[in-house]
Image 1 (cartoon, rainbow, N blue to C red):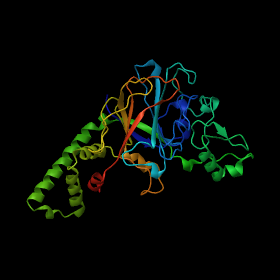
Image 2: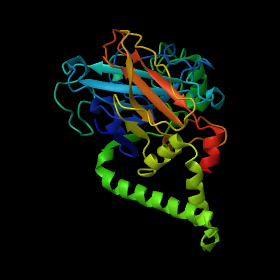
Image 3: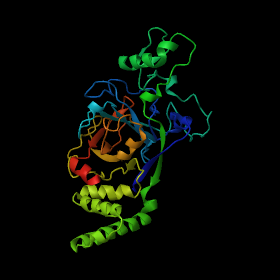
Image 4: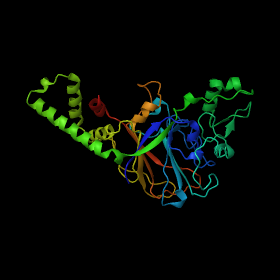
Length: 352
């Protein structure tokens, strides 16, 4: 399989609903299985014990597996900075859902991408979801009994952010969009489509580095008139000290806006030699091995509109591993494994 790259694009919100099997970032999850969706217990952060919020999802069907004709992977994260610990994954959750072509939720034919097509295909027909975050909601506002919540924390948040004024009235409930990440479509492109140009750029960069190193050795580096050029080339030289980080930088520089790399059964593009994963837990459903499926890149952080750049969630890469058998869960959603690798101080120094 060739490697596919994911890029974010703005689009109409209706295109990102479950009925169109979207790949997306932010907003509420577009659930595939509309009935048996995860709730607070399944999505609880291991550190603060509050539910993680939706980060992104990728639609990734298995072409040769009938019961995975539709298949989506969901990633959630706790947005509290204090729960984002170096090279630890307790603030992250990942789930896989899949369905056969013939199922109780969707017609067996491709969707028609029109605003009013099959608007009845929705979780609201099957289950109550949290007004704040979109996961399973077992409780509701005791006063109006119209708005549902996954936990008391989200109910309190919503009360303070507008429901206090609208409760028991005809006012439309507030959406609380600031609690969630901005919503984007994930557009997929093949990395191979740009391979020739990328190879030429890499060769040119390597030649520039060799030329500059030679000038440094011969005491001629000062002949450069542009100090910025000197600093840039020197930075590239320093990056060679960590071959893994250098390969990471050279790879993503070819397509610097990529927020996702999809390579099912392939290899992780690590950001450092340190803290690489050594042992991947087996599938908790069928006890089969897991394989690498895709990774989320640090560029995604640029699109999340995080309030404080110095005190916020962060990662180097997020690597997602899924069951090689892609087994079907009786509960609708199978927990998969995610590994967080961060940028070390050495990498940060080289990158600056």
